[in-house]
Image 1 (cartoon, rainbow, N blue to C red):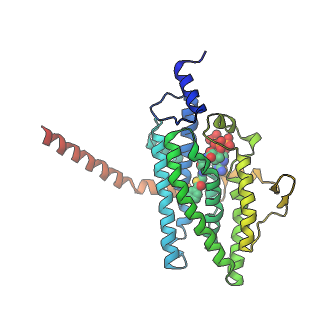
Image 2 (image 1 turned 90 degrees about the vertical axis):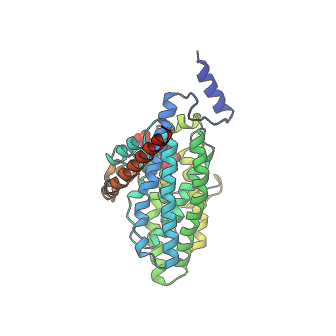
Image 3 (image 1 turned 45 degrees about the vertical axis):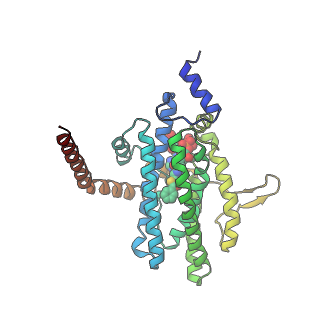
Length: 314
Ligand code: BYC
């Protein structure tokens, strides 16, 4: 027999009424959300590193200003998402400890290096493109604070994707060397972007329950297929190629067929053994340690303000 709060929770999910932080929720629902939202927040924060690497080397002032704005947006996304996760009863410190100790996951994609300027274009087009595909449905996620954070995030991701596409378009219409640089970036970023959607559905332990609770609205494979279908068309406009000899429109399924995904590589990267995992975590830990004085100063200032207010009230 279900208890009254359980019935009320299920009714809300069925009727598309958002679950809010103070509502009763099953412990597993809370855990599932903390896991996904905190990993998502970590991904945004670690995601600043590969692109930040190119701020000092952007080819023009305009490109530099745009890239700074984009990287700053990712920081903002991380902060809304940490705040959304905090409403579920986990502290910021706990989440950061999980990231810095290597216990928490973050998106596999950010463990690849950014070797040329064209990589910034490829990240914008493909990585932000994959993010939009995955995150637009999360605007309808059943947990209110997550869904609301995603609305603004998706608007910003959409600008990020266009700036990436525009970088690639400029390179693809440039000199032979620029075209080759753009193609090389696509060759390296395509498969890791396809992997971003997570393991295939029959190897995804969380999808079924997450979809029942309307946290996720589509499965990993469904979103991956949509992404491939969109990119296979957009790449024609760039006059470049996606590095998949099996990529072919299938009249019967009305989707693009694609080649095998290297799941060994995916799990290697997820489990900490990708090309840049160590570098990324070292950079995160160093940034956190270097920022200690800022946190100390902010806490001391807040203490001083509190004391002044209580003295004034006495
Ligand atoms: N990388 O059962 P599954 C961005 C893990 S930020 C690493 O399918 P779920 C951007 C998964 O966590 C991009 N790990 O899980 C930022 C699970 O492990 P645990 C991040 C992955 O949650 C800056 C296990 O594999 N986006 O776009 O149902 C600049 C089994 O997977 C990955 C989000 O976080 C991966 N790629 O589905 C530019 C979006 N895939 O936790 C762009 C929100 C899977 O059981 N998250 N794993 O130990 C989601 O939509 C879902 O969490 C996922 C995975 C689709 C990622």
